[in-house]
Image 1 (cartoon, protein in one colour):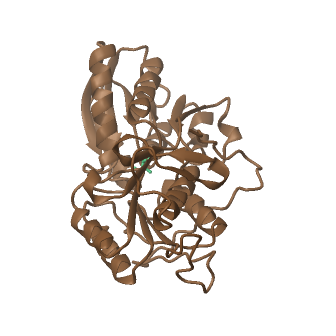
Image 2: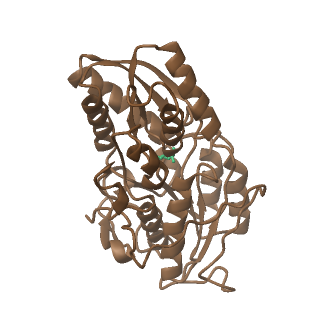
Length: 348
Ligand code: RAM
């Protein structure tokens, strides 16, 4: 198993983020294959891979698409990105249907809901399109493979460890999540609740709120939490959009340095809040590597090199060889912790 290697500042292979084109319902970022739409690889399949994130305009998914695009260029396929502006349960359905009609080789999707997009994905697969979930899974029967960013238990434990450290292992905390149906968020929240109950008896989780991976909603939910729970000691936000919005609120409020904040964030969005003392530490993996690995997994499925079964192995370019594990899942690596001592080493 190869572990994630976050992009370090100055590395030549850094690729600027894919620009989000606002105001369009369909965003196409074609590349790599040039005119060779549907160009085939060694296995003779259609190496057109379309990324469908939870929502557009989220720097996390800009980074995963940057990695996906780099991989698709590397193996000579055709890359596209399409997606909704809001991360609601069925907002991805119409995009999946269009891709099915277009007959793309593979859809790489981060699911806003484990079930709501199931029928659409099944139709895509019946028509011959491979379906790879990444970041946030569907129910397993709707996809060929899930590319997971890290072990879910490890992600949950890390965030509980960070908040416990920040508040001296006691006091009231809240969770600011993304959308209420997101598979990844809900799994991490469940595991964090279990960890808190088993190992941190003096920490009380008073409320979980949802900012829908929307900056303003997350900002407003943070304000409401602090107003409602005047003795709140800390907030965990396991979403890059949520933690950045919460940090912005805290940094400009009476709670700065008094209410702890941690969770999952991108170093670029969190840098100023770590430097101004609003946030001590937080965690993430490399979303760019996640997209890169996902694209190579899609290629292996299209080429027929793997079926997505446990024990299948495939090559993922610069990341090396990966093996499919239990539940048709491939794991990128371990999450990383960022703080004032190392945050300037990272640029994503
Ligand atoms: C947001 C999304 C994504 C999650 C990251 C940590 O960008 O909710 O699904 O994995 O945060």
